[in-house]
Image (tube, rainbow, N blue to C red):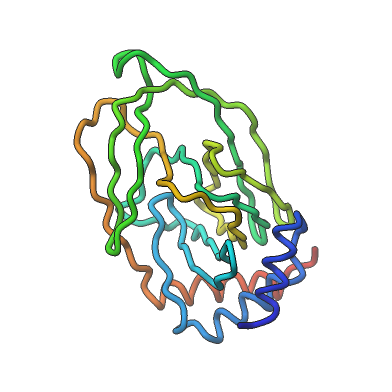
Length: 220
């Protein structure tokens, strides 16, 4: 394993930004592109596992400028079964943490809670029959170089301008052995399958090249 991956992982866990490491990490990923298996995440970004460590992973997330995939879901409020420690290495994000109140039934709710079951070829969304109304609790504007952490169990979503590429390096840590949860349509009663969507190699390489070109012209 490349030592720079380990350094980035440890620095993210300690709450440090890693902008100085971003270019060599992404250059290394581009040089060895065929070793990686990027996918389109249902939340709208290209997801790439970079390295595994005891208790966590280093990941690369890329939201392409002006691009999405046809299975990207509209509702993006979700939580994680691990802590998410991120450095924004290109672009801007708006991270919104939510709080919620349980409702008596779907007629009085904006959302239903779903359990996400991960499978080899995708995931299943299982409706819980529990309904909620949510409201924004904390809204944080993030820009290049910012570090941010979303603790496990915190419902949140990240928003960005579709016309701009956004890139984060992420360290996951402190995982729990349970299924993650998300908020979805209130009135669904059937489980739904989300197929795994592979990111084409040329698309991934083009996005990596765009990041590297940005770094070459970045003046701080």
